[in-house]
Length: 163
Image (cartoon, rainbow, N blue to C red; front, side, top):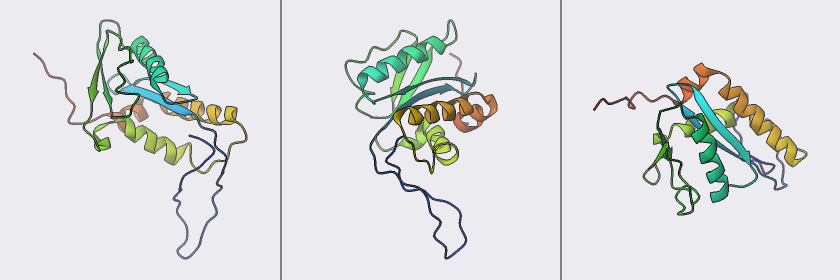
């Protein structure tokens, strides 16, 4: 999320061209987020960059939210910082890496689409702190509604299997 916006779509009367603000400065913040649809539990950090050290901090945050005695399975795509050999995976987390070009298999992608469409679109930020505040507000809006967390991230094909 940042000052350099992306193409935004909006409903408008046919034949009209609604205006949307666009910023050409380059300040960014990155939301690292994870959810447990069954418990509607979330863990997130807003970081100044997306790299291995940020991912390690996020793994620690996720590890703290895993229920006592439970084990988390974390689904991740092929981003460079997701597969780094310098990652320190906590004992209560297992990483499952998705095949390339399969974002539809990752429930967290629905969160990003929801936040972009409902909380982070069509914005111009004056400062980096404004970007961070908006990211935090957006995540907290999402995370503080357990039904929203479940409805956006639950997958019918993901069922518990007894051994």
